[in-house]
Image (cartoon, rainbow, N blue to C red; front, side, top):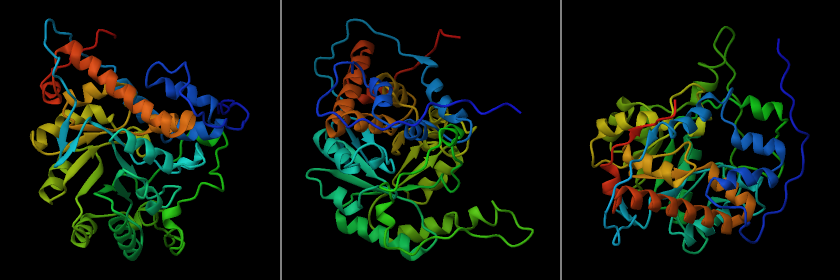
Length: 380
């Protein structure tokens, strides 16, 4: 048996800065610099996927497998990145994905991220497992927020979360369906990560504690245990009957599921493998996006997350069928480095990187990007 790899000794995180560090030259630089601001075990937890990180790494590789071909003499003086996403007018296609426990990297957590979203006119999806109450996040001036919902074992709790989100002014529900089982990252386990006491799922405070289902003798710990309360199609139908808010579904990787969700009246989809944090060995989100777009047709709202690190990545996602993208880990890295200022700056850099790709490839708007054909990468 091979010994577990050695890991660095845990260290304390640095305080977030109140300025943009000079060494930040591109959006992905926040990922590299964040190592200095996040304690080692916490960084391993954030950066890791599940088990061996196979899918988390596949997400990154997928974006390296296509090239954007430059064009000459194109007039892009009136170009823009505006879009209409399911009736919502946005200045750019960069949304902030739901990321749990943001107090892990900043004392104010999701409140800072909300301030950045408001400043950059982005949509913020707030996690059920946020470390700030959903009401507090929604009260940040100017924020346009969606609530990311996990089904709870007790429908009464799920309904209460839904009603709280509606009362707080959330504009849509982002229902995550691919995370009934989340296997820990071996990287985080070996680094000794334990969730700190100050990082709690504040939205679930006050509800009865959930106890793990214990299967009967001879039953499976997975099938009759963990999956006992996993959502099914009837749960989706029940949820739709409880609210007038648009319901998007996050975690779609199969075209048949995408079509079934559209037929059942879901407002839009997020093609996602949860950043590689669910089934290790699942395909990269980007690799299945074209098939899902083909199955859904051109007019159905489809977004993508998992693996985006640059504006070039955003360009490729849109070229392969996404209307917009959701940014996950990069928002946490930027939050750790410079709080709301860092997250806003990260979004600004991503938008400018996208605009560079559009300008150099002759795309005057996002529809032109959607019509762009990527070329195979020359890197073997």
